[in-house]
Length: 322
Image (cartoon, rainbow, N blue to C red; front, side, top):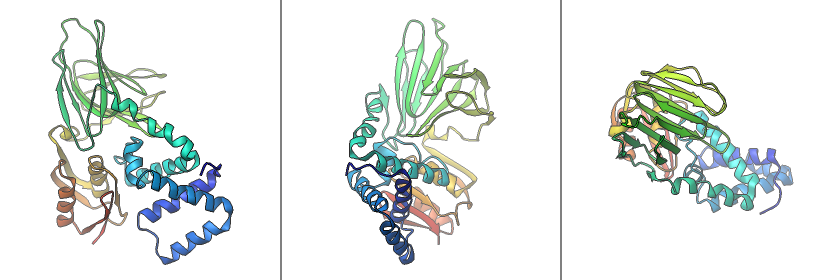
């Protein structure tokens, strides 16, 4: 299984495998898959590697979301699927020799000062009186020195409520893309890392922050605004979404919110994949939901909307028209 894999064949094999795992292949599509495998030796080699990936990682969706610590489930369905395809194609090309390096990536999270499991929310009081909350599947280091109060976000999402410091040390959150300096504030920082991309999202509830990309110009973000940045620059600020920090109380607010967006948020709090059929993706959802029991949340959505929740396995949920 260590033979070199053609990159194009790997991408095609990944597409077929995601469709197969999602229960999307009817008899005609299965016949088309068989023809594709037989069309060229590269295709069959890539398909066998794809099957080996799924066996080795247990099942396609959970490893991509957990073993590789890829926070792709909080994106819209289309972006989630694209990220999954890219990741699976990369695993197919890498082969067993490369999987050890990919699996080693989470060590940085496991050795963090504080972390949460998927579905867990944790609140901490820091030495200076500031408050730090970690959302689901998050990890951070806390490094306070004589000159600086530093929180290094390794994965996931945190909320910070700073307090005045007697020694007037700046309070800084650092991510892989740069840093955020608090200016007397309450704010949320989410690290969005995948194997192929990384961005940081900042939302300010009170006060202001200075966003400083690693290789870009600093930007002041005021209360009521949010923005994303990578290593080179910051995107245009957008109004802060209502109830953006509801997760601090373990709640998910929806106000005529598209079902696809609600499911994308729900998926951050459970292992595996939650797939939304485009036919129902735009259905409006309104209400306040508890995040501690995502299965109950899915049942509530099914009871209130013309949808059916199909549980292919504990790892793969498909939401479709009733």
